[in-house]
Image (cartoon, rainbow, N blue to C red):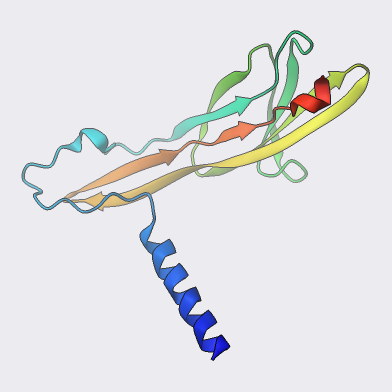
Length: 147
């Protein structure tokens, strides 16, 4: 009995997960469809956004951006950020990892995170729409670390 209940819950979850994608509902009237929310040109690049901690105590943060995971990936760029947010153009359908290097009162701290710049494709009427999911990669420090 318990096993049947678990299987039923799992099936409901899988069905709902399949329905909750980034694809909008199919329009009822294709003749008058407004394509303003549909990018019909396939993008080759998108933006990754890096968030770092910059304040009176931390005035700049060196970062390294990798294609793939940090330990297996290819180093793409190194930069030093003096603002809390910076965006970079990168090729789509890749996973990007970031290391932020902090020096807090002589203590060296690395913050590591990543995200995928994903291109979703779906048909609308007689066209193809492209939607980018652009990651926000948060390598900020918690306040208790630097206060």
